[in-house]
Amino acid sequence: MRYSRSFQVFRMIFRERYREPTLELVLPTMLVANIFLNAYYERSGFQLLGIVLAFVPIISVSETLAFAIGFRNIVYVTGDHIYKGGIISFITTPISRSKIFLYIYISDVIIPLIFWLLTTLAYATMAGISIPPLVLLTFIVGYFFSENIIFTLTLTLRSPGIITLASLFVIGGIFIFGGIGLYYLLLKRSIEELYLLSFMNPYLLWIGQAEGGKFMPIIISGITADALIAIALFVSSFMIFRRLEL
Amino acid sequence: MKLSGLIIALGIALLSLALTSINATVTLTNTFTNSYSIYIPGTAIGTLQLSQNATNITTYLLVIHNGEREFVKLPATLYLSPGNWTLMPYNETYYQIVNKVENVTEKTNCGNVTVQKVIKVSVENVTNKLTSPVIVKVNIYRMYLVRDPGLIEVIGISTLIIGIALFVVERFHS
Image (cartoon, rainbow over all chains, first blue to last red; front, side):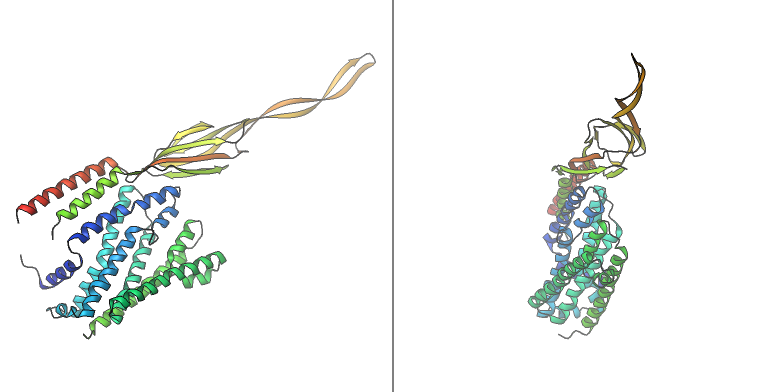
């Protein structure tokens, strides 16, 4: 069977990132790691709070795993290729640069997200827990937000060590200081300032919402801001990749 | 790409999900006077303990479970089945000892004398509103990870068998 040229390149890019034991290790772990959803759901008296807590990154193992795989793909596969010049062999294949960028983006960022989404939805269906779609969307948008930051950093800084440090500082700073700031503002009950910081860590607002607050418009504005920043970063990394000089 | 490894791994994961359950007992304690409702998912197994911290009160609760109505006299223990549980007070009966002042006419040698006497009378009160709050203890002593462990177990075992068969085929026919 002969595949089209684009598909052959895509398969090459995909296979490089998901070699033999990767999928076998990652997919079952993601599926099983969702037991925290059940555990927190039980502890919270079958309320929204348990679902929200189980969806906070770092607490949720499968989310962290998806993020880590995306991080590894971007920094240590794509970033390494750009740093050492291995990307030239991909660029010299007879398809356009924008297509190569798209394939790299899909296999680096979108496929781990699809794994996470599939395993989480399968688990939620099996366990009979109905997850609010907006909670899922919060993580999806946040995932694109942080992975696009790493992607842009990779294309501008190039060296894997520096990218790892820089992205840890940037993303960690955004989430941790955003969380601290939002917590302070939640205690202060200053709604206008909450809108400003809401894009930094919407999970805190979700916890507030589950505890009986009314923060839904703030959460939606935060997700929208996250999505806009993610799209801007995606476009900018696409521009940088198209003009990449090696 | 070899699929057999992935399918075997997924089969083991499904099997482990079906066979595992969280056994730590979780107790949720609440009090109410108006109404209380809780949703129990299909994975939880436990009891609902209803009691009242009062000795001379008899309370009947209306328990609505998935549309079925039932009257329960406190204290009571109910086995939880999945669905929505709503508890509402139906009536409360309690006896109250009241000091009653009565005019009693006594016959004496000098004629009839009216004397006021204090008599203790016990009065039965029936109300729809609770005077003493009901304590609800939801004990979840087992939480399955999946709603239908049997089905998931069968799916896991069959996935495992398919994976092993595929592994054998890939091993000897390539």
